[in-house]
Image 1: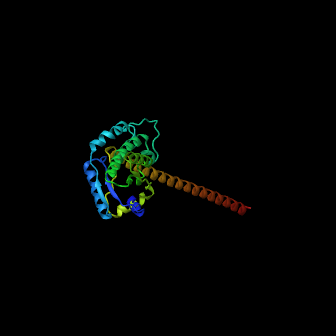
Image 2: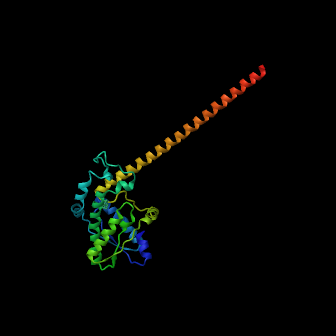
Image 3: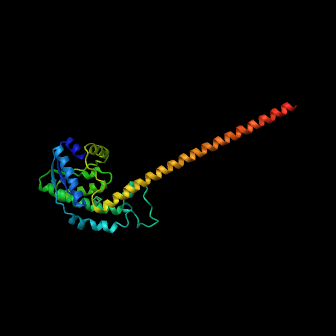
Length: 248
Ligand code: SF4
């Protein structure tokens, strides 16, 4: 979706695939192949960065290791009982500790992309990260500006999240692979925790709906029984009055 919008703005696009964060390697390759097909279909040049998971492990993973026992998005099994539990996916994922880990991850990849763009003589740099509602868009913006300023290249930031549904629909129509986690090994567990959370929420909503339906039905039956009892009492009264009239 960002590529279509950028083309409409008159930009000539080259796609840079910089994803040392992705684990395992087979997933990295699968996503790269999908992007290659898409780039070929759209007529974009595509450049692949160095796949260097060891670099990512040095730069980012220590933050992930330090937070993993405390993050609700990582299952929260070690979080204290008095910790407020998330009530929405946004709350589940919007965790300050995760934010810092993802910041380090964006930083590493955007610095790589900015250096590559400068070396290649490009005019500016943007990022497709800004299309996902599951990312920290404000942090992406900050890190894009930082990386571009440091490298000496123009930053082109746009919040593409309003186009996320459209992008999802198009990728489905094209039969493209749709990943179910962000990329790093921590996000595999986060993806699972998120899906379990959504499942639990749906179950709770279904249960609440069923309970509301049952309460409504019980209230309806109670009202009907009251009506019936009133009708019977009235009929009894009328019968007594009739009998009294007949006697007199
Ligand atoms: S969740 Fe995504 S952005 Fe955050 S550290 Fe993992 S791969 Fe990087």
